[in-house]
Amino acid sequence: MKKIILMGKSTCGKTTLTQALQGKKIQYRKTQYINHYDVIIDTPGEYAENHTLARALALFAYEADVIGFLISSTEHYSLYPPCIVGQVTRPVIGIVTQIDAKEANPNQAEKWLRLVGCTDIFHVSAYTGEGVGEILEYLRDKNDVLPWDS
Image (tube, rainbow, N blue to C red):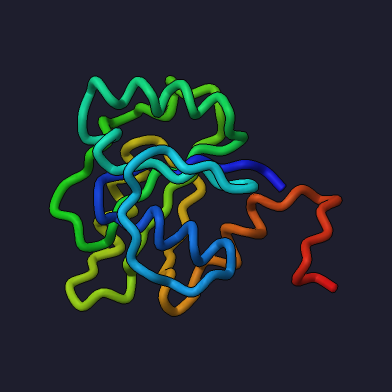
């Protein structure tokens, strides 16, 4: 299984997606520091929102095989600069979260992720599970045998 680091603004759904990817019950938990799980690195949104703290994201990204840029479908702007993916030494996927929210606009979030340079984009709802399986499949190495496969 490829290791992924999740990056994005506060409240975009990184920790909730982490719980969904692990098959855990969804519960609110504010991420205060970078958390390492088996194949997931969950990061605080403040690290992406503050240019001084963002340096830590660059360092921790070296521990991952894949970088996941998250944008909530309820956002009014993108945190990421255009064409930033070209500067990254790992594959970068885009993840549109909260697609089941009342005010969701997943198409706008996807446009922002494409402008950033993401070509592989996943639409997810951690609460309904929609799209979570597709991310897990993307992260799976061809020889992986996962516990839920048996």
